[in-house]
Image 1 (tube, one colour):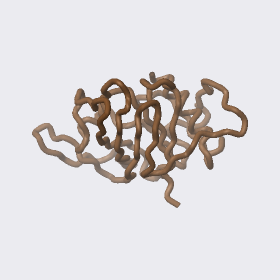
Image 2: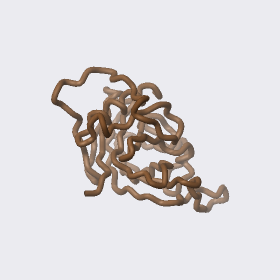
Image 3: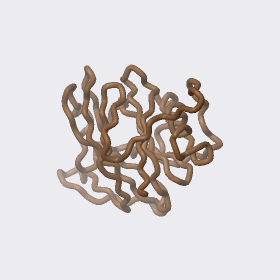
Amino acid sequence: MNKVMVAAVGVGLLLTAGCGSDDSPAAEGDQTTTPTTTTEAAAPTAPTPAGTSPAIFEVGQPVENGGLTVTVTSVDASPTVPVSDGAGGYRDRAAAEGSQYVVLSADIVNGMAAPIDLSCGETIGTRLADAQKQQFNVIADLDSVQGNRPCGDQLAPGTDGQIRWVFEVGADSVPKVFAFLNADGPEPTAVKVVNLSVD
């Protein structure tokens, strides 16, 4: 799934309205939070018809992708994020020096036939791209973030739940777009893009 995510998100962001090839971030790998540059862009998996681009959605707008509906409800930047302390409580984890956290809160509706693991599963592939032409992956231990489900606590078909996707980015990073795909959907490389810019 990693190579599929890389290629698909690279294509989706290259075609993002208002983010032409000069502003489009590229992707490499899928398990790190380090940024990549445009010189490492993945080749498109399929040609895109001339003059077309993917629909761009806004924060608060439901986005359907292969049976999953994702609504990004808020985007916040913070130097810390509350994570499990291992004793039933939470403590603030500070971002590394020169970094900050970007937290995307979202509502998820599972309209598929099978349950999904929001915190530890690979059904929903995600990327955050910033105005500095960089892409970021979620942190490795999403299940430890306050408000998130533990690993294995699955969202059943026909139900809805919440997730807080957390990305560690540079202190000067300005979030621009969020992209996601549904690896278990009928079009597993179809990327949906949400505009995070505040005008």
